[in-house]
Length: 346
Image 1 (cartoon, rainbow, N blue to C red):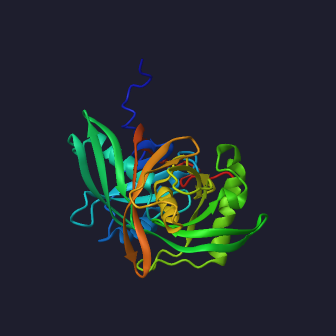
Image 2 (cartoon, rainbow, N blue to C red):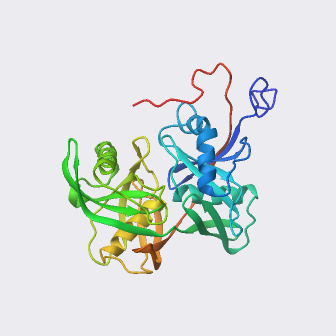
Image 3 (spheres, rainbow, N blue to C red):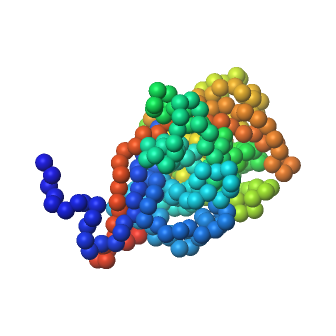
């Protein structure tokens, strides 16, 4: 039975609306904007990101905050490609900021755009290049018997900037972190250091601690990217279970944004962890590693090559996962709505 006479997609008295296709990757939401936004200007993804931030930040807030979203929601906007080899571009955003890169959202975008027909896939491996604010990223969608089986990403080059950096965290005292770049800067900290296992039961204290570590790291540490001067803040804390020699799997809790725990294993976080493990000589090139999320979902990963970023030793991680579509939405804003840019409750 239908409880409407007019098409719900054609409501009178409201604007045209923002069209999104929502998915989850290992439990973490991606709200992919596929319609309703005018041309996003800029001949690079960094410039497109800045243009969107200047002209459409109200849409970020509307899509990622209550009552239409929530503090843990991540959205991505599909753009025209800016490099000849790329198929499309992505601008990432959450309730607080515009991440330079997001692995789970990239997987969600590939799966979604394949399902809509924008990406035409054949049996076997399908290479798809994507422009991101962190640079072009090579992905591979694997099609088996007419269905997408997985999406693998060659992450942007990652490197360890500093190890054993001691910071003073209010309410927790002195902690030692490692600073790793993987699309953005991560403060990495082992459960050996905190005495707190990265499991759901400890989510509240890890969320609080994670946000305080981000603030303390930005106040007491200096981060820089040799080739990307705009990247100069620590945006994420990653708590990971202590590792021993010749590790093949592990678990993490990643905290970022507006006090949010990533439900997925985190693509950039998985790459950051492998980068640190390789730096500590605990994992080899091409060694398979499975990274588990707080929910028990996983990404498969391995390091595929070494290189230099400026004078720093760097690696490229290949991370593989899968996404599932959860809904198609048309978000509207009525003139009388008291919350045009949403809200967050602490």
